[in-house]
Image 1 (tube, rainbow, N blue to C red):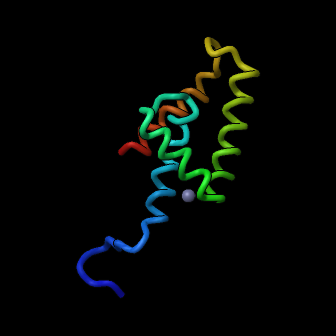
Image 2 (cartoon, helix red, strand yellow):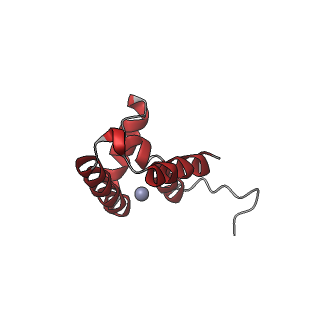
Length: 90
Ligand SMILES: [Zn+2]
């Protein structure tokens, strides 16, 4: 057990995954800064689990964008996405 706080300085792999997954939606909507987007791309290539999650999210986003003109996206879904963002930011 490491002493001196809850941060382990070994390899924050889990933390990177959490950060990458928290930003996947912003990434898919091209709302990230170039540097942040690069960081996620880099992580996805290095992390199979996150890549899997990303592909699922990416497929869902694409399906929504293809089947629904952006102007008439279901309000329930839009609300859900906004709620998600707010929750993850906080
Ligand atoms: Zn990861």
